[in-house]
Image (tube, rainbow, N blue to C red):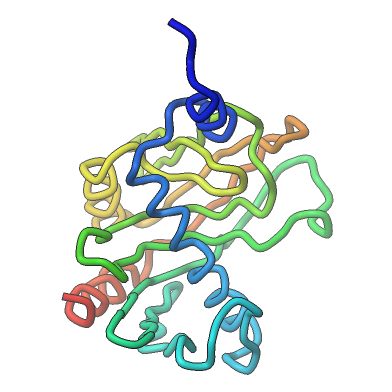
Length: 201
């Protein structure tokens, strides 16, 4: 059976047929990255694609995690985020972009508990990302410079481990074949996650 052009394009991006869920997550990525840019400048700068009404509001800083909400019209998005405490690999840090993990709700009711990792580089085509949380392993698929779990069930399992765990490592491979390992602290995760659960209920 010959694959359609759309199927070929999907495989080029992810190494497997992209699901509707992944497409929805991809669409929300611009919002989260805009919030990242603002956070880096203490909320004084807006990303070019966002309106003033969509300015993220920081609700909480709890140890190594922060919680935000974004209100745009009747839509509300909530998310928590953290940066690695340690990053290793044979690369020049100056050539790597921002590295972050997000867990988000919204803006649609169907979009809850979405975990995504931003690598700071484009992943090797068809490669996976390995996440370990206190010894428990998860395999994520990649879209350009991001990584996602295969299903909502996997997201929930990963979040459950993040609540119970102390440390999380994320291993990925860049388009140049460079392997990176990012280590995140999970201190503060549970309190931050509980807040966005209530705020975006």
